[in-house]
Length: 88
Image (cartoon, rainbow, N blue to C red; front, side, top):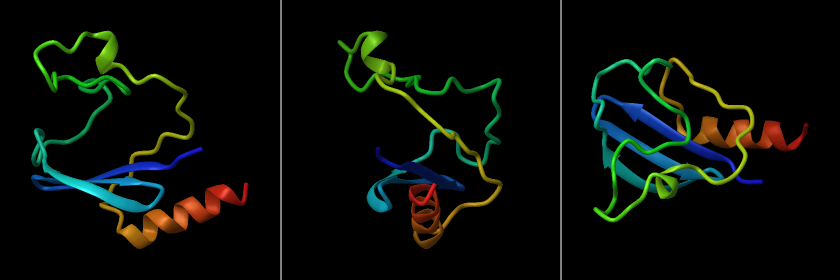
């Protein structure tokens, strides 16, 4: 399995795969709260290219143990979660 994480603070997002920072981007939702009524888990609300279909924007796979934290986690905290989850 792979551990995926995204952190957001203000207008900046950090993306992690298995605890390693793989990229940074400006947030489209800077300083707006994340609520379940505004987001659909596993679907991109935008197209990376004009030819991208709805099916290509949908996550293909299985997600388990989705979490939203009230604070931005550090890389160290993300790695601690990964190590804890691997011990289960």
